[in-house]
Image (tube, rainbow, N blue to C red; front, top):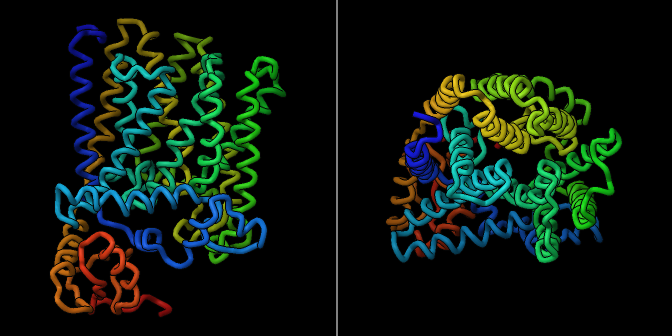
Length: 472
């Protein structure tokens, strides 16, 4: 049976639907995270963020407060998690509506990123076409919620971080699409209407999440290097792209400047030399701790060798060097973003997400090219290797719903409680990162449960069997 057989695409579509359904089950059965109440109620520290879309309090008054350059992530997150559960309660009960809203948000980020990456590597929004479907299937295997999540995770288990990493990355990909079309395919079909729409999109991209400004500046730096080396001629670049690039660069610098007033970074500060000293171990740990990246890198090396043999002049092969250069510069700049105690080695699956997306996009793009270029006699072996890769990642993508079951049982106990506070018996945090022996940490969360109509009035809760955290 030839690879282009009429049976292949329906089978791939079925497998993609099964993978997507499984991903949704994983997302639905993940527990709620401890930053939800702080962002959604919100806490008093969050008000300056929501009151100043452009971070003017920091710019004009030098005020330090959390995330002054991430307004759109906070705003979208709060609006969605306040309204979506209430809308879903027309069809299900309150506790289910919250898990369902969280799961749907993760699934939308999941499908959005796959769609945008498939569009980037195929060059067109032809969702029903063979190349687009194959690209989607190649990419889907890398969206992990199981064993590989801590290394190659893209859609975070914590709903909060989906809105600060996966969603901004999707917006970044959307903004970058005209630039990728020009650089990879020499297409310059950016209309006046699209140019006008991309101006406000630039503000959203640069003032969402912690990573986008750095990604844009690294991309502009690489563009400058390409120009200096003669690989990119300024006169060939459409003026509209140049103007959008300048705007995005200026907004990125502004966003990074606002980041100096981020009180969360200041509270976790370390000397820059010590932060850089942690970087090498972080790189080793992140890329060798599991099979997630070694398998991907092995296949990229195979693809590069095959492209060199069967398509030496293909543009896809030239992208390998630029992606590696992007990753290297990005890693060198990461310590400048500040230190967080929960990212002791600087690199973590969330901080390296742009690099992860670049590598898996390169993998899908090079695979698509080789499926055309590899001679028929060797194609069966190549397709078999792609299937082995998919099986490795699918086998690792198992999930444990015990934390969800524990938290849900606790929420149901809180929902029917007649008195406050409620002593919980489980060993899991309930819309908190951990368990606490006193009710202090549940005050903000109790207000969120009222917003979600899980309780009619604030109900405090605690875990009497828990020891107080160190230092308290």
